[in-house]
Image 1 (cartoon, rainbow, N blue to C red):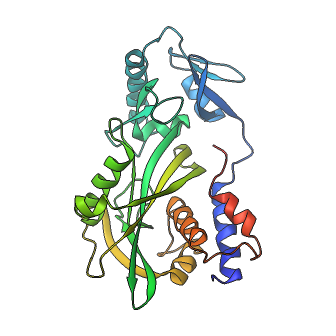
Image 2: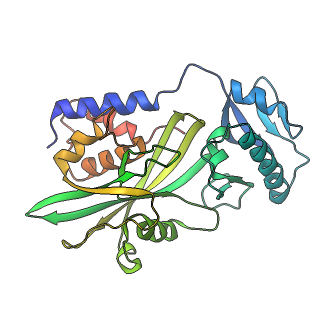
Length: 292
């Protein structure tokens, strides 16, 4: 069981990081469907583009753009301009599908680095790399490269990546497991789905609204992660008590990303290491599925 003081620190850290500022967020709508949320500063900038109708209550994409291809083309040009202005520092050259619901036909495609500017809902797959050693359950954490645009140098789950257009959840798990940790495909396909979490937080380039598809992967005792794409620079094997202490760290070298902290917290709750009769359990549990 995780110490009550550690749980309190985890709650304070995640709650602060996910609290929305007292600012207006206008729905970003496409063909009458609310797909994102835009703050006042960004709404004012978007009013300068002919393809947006910015009102007091909405930021609406021009209804004359009535196909996914037309909308995607217009959004791509807007994204290129915003990038030149320095507003999209996390550019990826990777497209995400924006739809009414996950798996629906996309209403438009958007550059991944622009998704948070518009506050559109995105999707990611995360994997807890779990190992049993000396009778204890342990978890692998990865340190992100200091060169990454988002959360540079912070600790992360063993595997975690956004779901790009054209890929499914398991496809993403297999792809990211190899790139980030050198997990062979046959082993990666054994990752067990464990539900979905919702991560919503203000970020430097807008608003993140992301659904995290969580998986648990039991790894052989002899397995040692080996990054393949340069995006992770260290791997650390910790027991669950240390994992809990680590996600309570609010700053410094051992700070864990908020998304990964939610995934670790979820695992601790599911495994019974955080119990319903502990103080603050309900509040901690609620952090896993914030309204998007």
